[in-house]
Image (tube, rainbow, N blue to C red; front, side, top):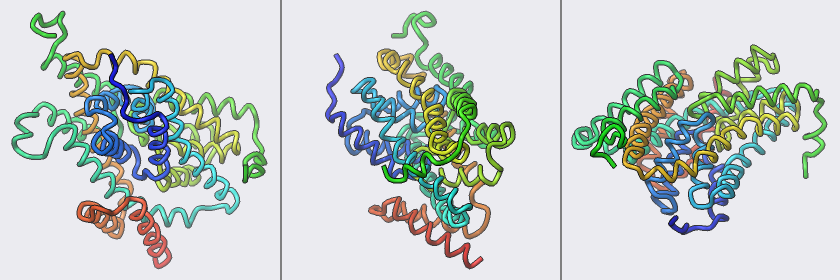
Length: 387
């Protein structure tokens, strides 16, 4: 018999609406916010359910944070919970990027936004580094000799995931599955293998000219982006760049870089940058088509296996499989943090902002991320104006 939820569907939807509105930092930070809020503070979701969701989200193609939100909504409220959690999580940032798309078209450039991104991007590195550290210690163990000895295999998987992700700059689904199977066979092989086992702006929205044939082409392209790209939201960026800039010539290289900047300075999942890209290509209809086509596969790939995954998740072999995948996934997320830092921190001032953000978050317990990012945005504008 399934345990009754200690929260209402409205409470869960409200939480994801709030997280989608104020959750800065990309997939690593968003995953840690969900674990901190839903597992530790509210205790709506168990640690085991969170690990299951993280494993399933990483195994399926699409944006990691959005898939995890969909799965956590599914845990106690099935398809309604998954649907409302997913919509609530993505909608705020989608609205923001469309509004920024309108501003971009109206004013013809994003110098001010790039100045803001300079500061915010550096501060985000501090946020996601701390989030990655917390996620690591909560899912694998504390960073000390006793934990290394007790969870030696899991720490090895973490290291492999981090190093391979950093070197290749992408997340490898075959690596995740292979390590999960290896750890399952090592710790708890299945029975067959081991006998001992067990309304305003409407004119702006629709005044943009577009070609219906372009919309169909966009729908196919963005559906493929959502269906065949694995890993965190950052993994989709090279795929989008290739199709949007080089293959279809919908945007210039600078416009695409501006779109990525928009995704980084808005809360919610990074993949919602497809809304901004879609708006630049074909106005509001393009934004809707791009967002729906990208997020539909991740929704389906999460909810369709979720019920079966929940039923078998308590099996000791499946638990070992999930533990192995979780360790390498967390390592891959840490590797992604290093890649982002390498691409974002290009000068001494950026490094200083990132380190200051990290120190402030570690020692000023009541400091909220949005306030930190606001200060970083102002600092970024000041620095760019001076330099």
